[in-house]
Image (cartoon, rainbow, N blue to C red; front, side):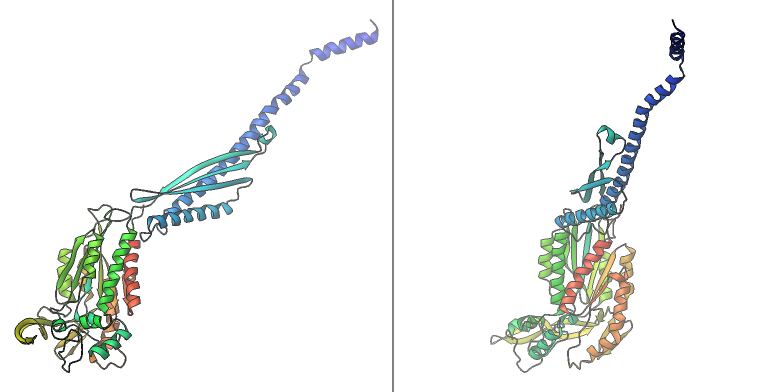
Length: 469
């Protein structure tokens, strides 16, 4: 073996025996899967972070669909579904737009269902996140998804008690045009409520016969000449509210109604019932009072307080929320008409007829308060808001509608003048004080305003009365 061969042989044996180089090689080879796993874990962590952000957005979207501002008792079920889905979609898309999800896209589907008496919103999302490390293995994106759900507070069971003013002053023409028509045809635009018995008996055509007692100055004649009284408008507005309740109901027998009217005394028009058709029939048949025909709000409220139950929480039919709708011009009067028996000629025959001839005495149960004024022996005054306190103490939500007077053009009736100058400014405040909250006090003058205010009074109280989870 030559010297060169011996040197090469020794060098080969030393290289084969040396283990230092294999450590670096082995380490380098082993790092390939380690780096791959670290890269994959970073990708998975990115996806998890993205999913968490989108989940939060979906949660917010679901909650927005059942928020108190979206779930309204005034909506029908179909309208509620549309509004809830619209709210969820708007929330999801607006939050996604500012979420800063780098390399990720996501979309959502929205399902609004009605379970029992609640609105349930489900927002399910799916998306993809771009990858880095696992992209080498052919996985350019990773998928993620999930769902969020929320439910609303249940609708309330509500008992609605209505107290409508049926006194003579509600016989005033509903609008300036109505009052002008009544003045020209009937000789009366204010408190046209006496002598109703004469209309079919003596003057069915409501013609002027030359006497003050010819029977024209009545609500019956006002209707015959095509005029509407304040009472007509209130009755019509109440009928519309009952229709609203039927549309708004999300539960069987969710709304119950009881209707009362008053003049000198309280009269039950319809006892509490969940049959909305029955209530509407009773309301549509409701007429102004002839007997008494004054306005003793204090007595009526005290008597109603004995009949109306305390308010519950509204969670069950056995514990309904109770609300009271007061509809009046806010003026009390002490007139108390009474029936007399008199001889009168009817169809050529003399008959003894017992009815209301227009005679009256002061109401013995009338409580005088201020401000107020006398017109002869007739007292007119603003109501006392303290009579509403008993209802509030029972937890009852009180809403008021003041059907304010309109003074007929050119009228010289001192009652109009006094009511406008002395009572009207006070009545607004007393009606506001009577209501549970200031925003539950409504004021209306024209027929359109009365109708709109009645609907708003009912709907606003219903919206504010909702339970919150």
